[in-house]
Amino acid sequence: MGAMNETSQHIGKVILAGAGCGDPELITVKAARYLQAADVVLTDRLVSKDILDRYVRKDAEVIYVGKQCRRGYSTPQESINSYIVEYALQGKLVVRLKGGDVSIFSNILDELQTVAEHNIPYEIIPGVTAALGAASYAGIPLTGRGLSTAVRLLTSYKSDIVTDAYWQELSQTTDTLVFYMSSETLDNVVANLVKYNIDPLKLMAVVEQATTPLQHVHISSLYDYEMNLKGRSFISPSLVIIGKVVALHEKYAWLPDAASTDHYFKPVLPDDNLLKATTNAGRE
Image (tube, rainbow, N blue to C red; front, side):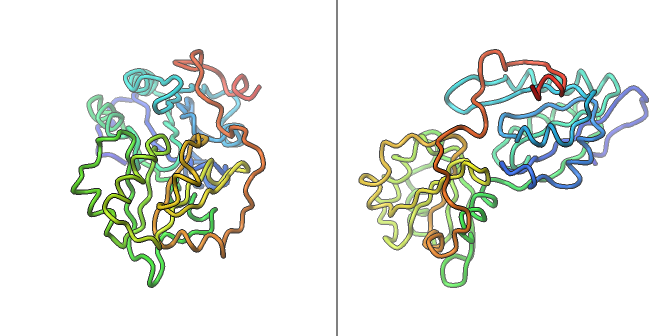
């Protein structure tokens, strides 16, 4: 728990918790316990509805604060921060529930700064992040003797977010590369790695809707990308794994690819912005 002043009896508490990545059974026991006690739950788009149905109190208030990178609609971070302060200062237990892990490519720093500035007590609860979930459910160990001894968690959601010098290093490293929020810039990722002569033995896996019943894994050599995957629109969320370990998928995949192309997590709609709903309404 953060070192906060808890002298006021009117200040509640904020729990910044990871829900895991897709499969509702990947939530931690601790996060589930706090959901059962929460007065208010601020939930992301990438949180399974089953988690809310199973663990949130029937009389708790659920507020949908979904974000959708580069397409659709998103709840402004300022609005989320305001909700956190508003309800915590009413003395309520607030769970800010994020898909995956709270510390990997999330806006947790904005929310930590908010609770700190208002002297609101808080806890941070980790979750199973997408890299670990996608790799495990695709049968791809992220490290392996003779294949990779390290993993890099990256993002390339803008074409200029990674420098040329770093692309050159990434192309030559033996580390497994995992790209979050990069399916829409995949052409650029592949082009830069091939430009700097990435090892042809390193394969790429694009894992759509990882750990859900709608998971689908696409495997390709980076040098065959144009023929195999270029131009394909991947369903959100999608994660990209690149390295020699990807070859293990063929042997160790245990979850069959889904035949359906439905969305496990519904896209954010305009009316979802700043939408308040009770848990029962959210389950209809």
